[in-house]
Length: 300
Ligand SMILES: Nc1ncnc2c1ncn2[C@@H]1O[C@H](COP(=O)(O)OP(=O)(O)OP(=O)(O)O)[C@@H](O)[C@H]1O
Ligand SMILES: [Mg+2]
Image (cartoon, rainbow, N blue to C red; front, side, top):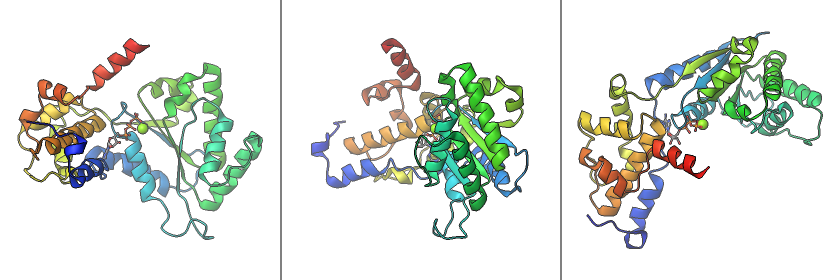
């Protein structure tokens, strides 16, 4: 089938290719269970030793998406500057190095209260405490917590101590997220490790979770905006999608988008199991996650 380049596509086709990538949130059992555990932290009263969670999973498997969805759910409905506003959940990206001053700065920036980067750490921490109390903040989310792995052991230790102190002083639970290396980083200090309960987001598995994987993929069909809305059919279809995406949700969704784009460019307007073969994927320039990391290895 002839593949039409952009100049041969109608504005409507180009529009479909662009907008299909705005994937709607898809709930699945594990994500709902994880969100419930996180919800429990929001409901609990301020405690002197708040419990923490760490969401652990391979890259591109949906950790940040769950965290953002949880944050959105707890975002206040009223104006942020109204006097009674509560902000139960605050989410920041972990700084690229284990530097607690930089973390405090990120938190204050997120709260719209950053001042000079030269403000002392004690002052930043005191202001965070005050604002968290005022906004009744219960949970602080640190996405990509494994970022601190690039720092020396001494700096990591200091950062983790600061994190424990932040949680205790401000009475907030901390939810960290990261790839499995994060468990080693937390294990470097047993008093930190036992404060973080791990929640795992495993890869999708052909034998154990193909049913739910199929349900997620099928629920995305409408968002692909193909003209022929033939339901995705057969175990083969979903197994191939799962195998080529190596069980990673983000990869499976990206692969679905690539196949849908190809279906628009060729005019086929549907996706079938026969499109998900090694030869065809090569033709449409799909690079598997494994090959991508292999090529990165060659470069460095
Ligand atoms: N529940 C979901 N609903 C819809 N799309 C999702 C969902 N989970 C993941 N995705 C898709 O997968 C992509 C990757 O997910 P996400 O960024 O959350 O992975 P991650 O585990 O945080 O990866 P990393 O460790 O590299 O940061 C997202 O951009 C989104 O398109
Ligand atoms: Mg992420």
